[in-house]
Amino acid sequence: MSRIQLLLATGIAGVDLALTRTVETFEGEVPGCVLAYYLDGSLADGDSIATSDLDLTLVITSCVEGGDAGDHDKLNEIAARCQRDAGLELDIGLLDERELANGLTPMLKYASRLIHGEDIRDRYPLLAIEDWTRERMNAAYWLMNRVFDRPAAVHIPLGYPDPDDLFYGYARRPIRLSDGSFAASTRDLVRVSGWIATALVAHRASRYVSRKRDCHREYRYAIGDQWSNLLDDIYERCRTDWGYLIPAGSEDRRRLRTICRQMLGFENHFLTIYRDLLLQQLRERAPRALWLMERFPLADASISAAFRSARSRTTISRATEER
Image (cartoon, rainbow, N blue to C red; front, top):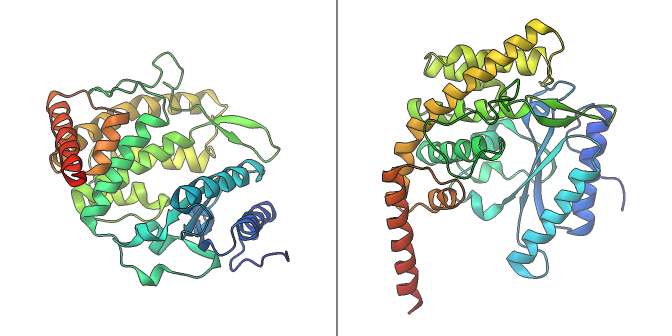
């Protein structure tokens, strides 16, 4: 197969090689299955730093022999292999075109860049703010519990991921450096705080945030409460000044420890707001809320009762449909 020509090149040799190889792999193994390849994140914005990861969204259609289940397994296997062999931090998201019927996220519609395939973004509207709010609030809840390896049962108030760690367990994610080695980083701290900020801006101000670099600015503009300085600090220090890495200087390390100590308060602030939205979703038997409570149950009497009721009614409804 001839070498793929990207519609957009970043100008960074290693990144463009990883993008090209990824497109070539999918086009060679499942030709016609991927409708569009979109570059996301800071590399799409031209705002990347040396330790930025590479984010790709692939819009797919059912095309692999074996039907939907076959599609899912085959495509995820290819994605995992591409990520493993990329030689850099590569994150591939697979998005079924059927999932776009309700609208596109603001990140995909406004902040992504097409690198190969057919641009399908004009075919679909922007996701309604109500749907976007729920999606982001649920996603932030999922992420804050998953990436910090907290116990499955979530309690309010939440505790530190690791109270005995210097940075309370918030700065452990390994990232791959340019020489191939790995180092602990604050990437998950930046990511979780940004997702929570985006969710709260949607929930409290009915505003979209499409770019990671805008999360803290939009939060200050739209909400402007006591957490604004923390969000500024996380983005400007952890990402911009320290490049996601743990700083070496003693003063900077003390500052990072303070940031991490304050992060727990922001997470608990989010949880108290999220609880009411979650309760509403459970009363409506929203599938995503049920899915979340099966994996990260919120230890709250009202939430538990609503979850049991929703699950029971869902089971009865399915049994009735099958008769």
